[in-house]
Length: 191
Image 1 (cartoon, rainbow, N blue to C red):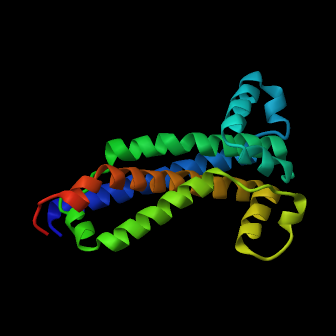
Image 2 (image 1 turned 30 degrees about the vertical axis):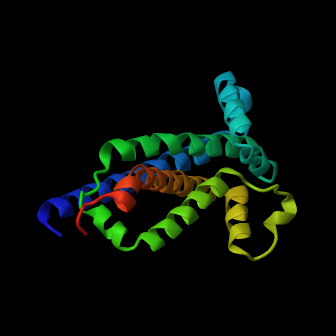
């Protein structure tokens, strides 16, 4: 790896780390400082959360099992709002070295498999399954995450912050790879 590639990698890592930090800071702050009736108090927030809930049905499902439903609606709505924002920032700011695609060409099967898995994961993140208070009981990791988001404001903010930046990173990766599929599979570049 030459100095230019190393500089690009450090810059990209810094951008991703900043997105995680900003989302954690904002969402934890909102989760901790918002009053229980935050949506009832503000017509703007009520409309914002209603629009978000109509696009992402999982917001209402998660709020239904939460100890602080209005705060959960607001934080999860913000989380899903951050996803396209961070994805756009990644597209504008992250630079991928030209020779990176040669590595994908060498491993086309693994690249295709990873791309399919990531694409499916992005879709699954967008749709939450029906949840009930009984889902909070048990020991599986998903139940632990759901319990942390439903019973702790800090847990809600941290997990939402992690998901917003992480899902944006996955969406960015899928899009950037799809855009470069002709270069990866059909290019005459030497590998």
